[in-house]
Image 1 (cartoon, rainbow, N blue to C red):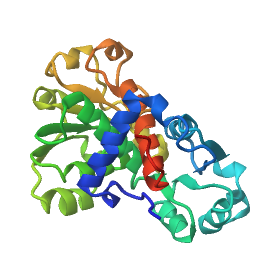
Image 2: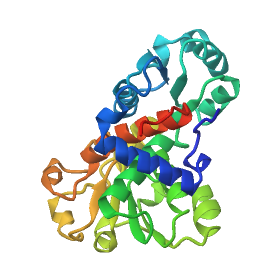
Image 3: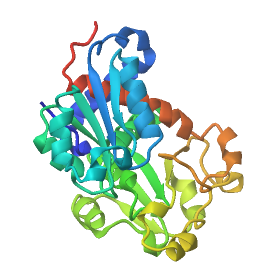
Length: 307
């Protein structure tokens, strides 16, 4: 039995096989429509989510399985003080696999240690978001045809953005990947990412404040929102929330083959006028998220795949 807590839980070879499976699911969805008949996915979401929770549910239903769970801590026994370990011991009696989102870093890991079914980390605080990373990798590979020899711009909240942290850790395992880290000084990437991942791995990167300076060099621009829920006071959030806004004028500085990604939800960091640009790939990215979660469920459940 395997769990998924981090993208690093899979080797590069395993990641490539998972992405190949997701590609085949996207091309031949009917082929997989009954692969999880009789299986149940528990979605235990202790904090709000739209795309991640619904895409997990859609993924399991597309495979012929069923879904149970809760969408907020208030509607679970956590409100009565139940531990995540006990919740997983009980959930293991009802479901075959579990996706958990929790505001506390490490909570899904603690839950997995008590679980007798595979547990997928669907986001833990500002730490990791591995299934979003799998989605990002599939999206980049589908759009650019590769995961190596790329210049990736990461823009916005790089301090609290778990999607950014996970994506950096995954991409550094591919050759000739360069990062441009675009953020105000207050929202720069944490030192453990800078020192333990980038510097230790001798990965080329630069930190800049102006989005306009970075755009001409990028193959991928990964925008993020400034997350109000991660700030300790309203004043800091208000000061930071409009620091970067990608609009049509800025897009004119970018290459014809640069694509814009965003884990969503978008607030106002990407102007609506950009949606019609053929390089805007963030809604396509959401669709890829269903395919990759279908592939992950099949992999962790060790389901026999159709020929």
